[in-house]
Length: 492
Ligand code: FES
Ligand SMILES: [Fe+2]
Image (cartoon, rainbow, N blue to C red; front, top):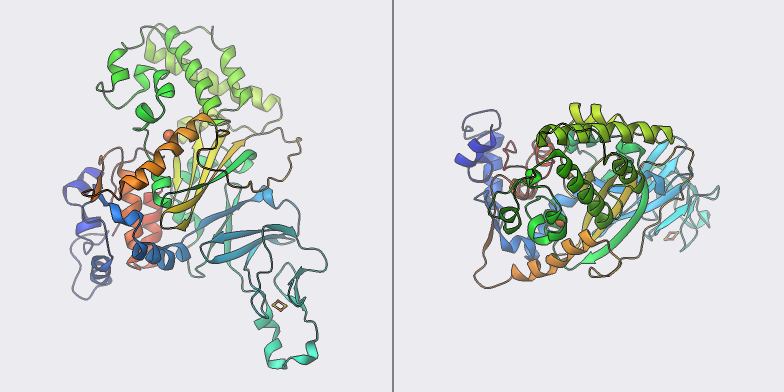
């Protein structure tokens, strides 16, 4: 269904009994059950353009997310570079659940993180499983990296019935890898990862996302609901007011939100291709510096070498010629430096991407040329979340990079953050507080450029209604998209 049709008759929010495949469901069909379940979700989205404010702080809503959303979704648990050697492990924590992700001789595995004796967490932070195995610090029981128990201290003191090897083995947790990361899912019956991540996978694969390595990693505890943090990056509409210095160096042709922006109305269209290139070079430099690595320094140097390239007179043709040449040069010069850069011209032609690519529920990438930034949000409470950023770059293949280690979270207003994330963070606590204001009942969304917010929120309702896993997987694949997306039919 076209997004506009979704708006005319918003099935997903108000007519959930209509199945994805066609007409109204019969009384006995699962769709009717789904509609009933959806109608029971507290604070649910009934108008796809209006998001109830209490969803961002209500304790009961948060409890339902903790019980019905987070245990069912694929979550980016770690970058694979964090566990480069066989035996390396890392702890991933989500709410009250802890999982160990470990690199073994037979691939990446994950286990629920509790000693089978009396429940002590076997690992905290990061570590390495030696020949001794994973050792419980309480009474010394041990497990190998495949999760098999290899030692029980004072074995004779226990009944044999309590020492069954199958029962003593660490319960495995679902884990799959994509894009240079391990993803876990606490649900043993969850559909496969790639069924849930959507079409952004192909777009990012075309850009060699799995070859990227960490340049830097930052972490902050934001005093906001996790959804609010995710939604701050779902549209480019905020750039004019939140990042005015970036907006000011964006060519009028590249701005898409109309002439009523004070800056746009003050500026005439770029009058020549040369001016377009000059301004674009300033824009790229501002973006690179402001994001602290989304455009790597060497890519910027390549762009600068094209300042005086021959250009057609027409601005549109000049812009096309500049970007085509820039992609070609980054590809050529990057490969000459032994960097595994994809063919950026081919990637742009065959897999056009958005400036922000989302993967439901809590991971997104910001691709540009060969480098990217990536973000992850995790709830810590109804109005608190852990928010992380990785700047990722394509390094020469023979360059040894140290395994990245988790940084201590900084305050959200720490002066060390690059300018652009700092500006994003500055709005969020104000927004969280504003949601509590008397008379503020719902956010009002643009159906075209803020549709992703609606898509995410309505999909969350599907999880809270405990719709069938294949329905939710299909919804997750549809909600995962590039930013500025319109309201979409999620299929329920
Ligand atoms: S709790 Fe782990 S060995 Fe006792
Ligand atoms: Fe922003």
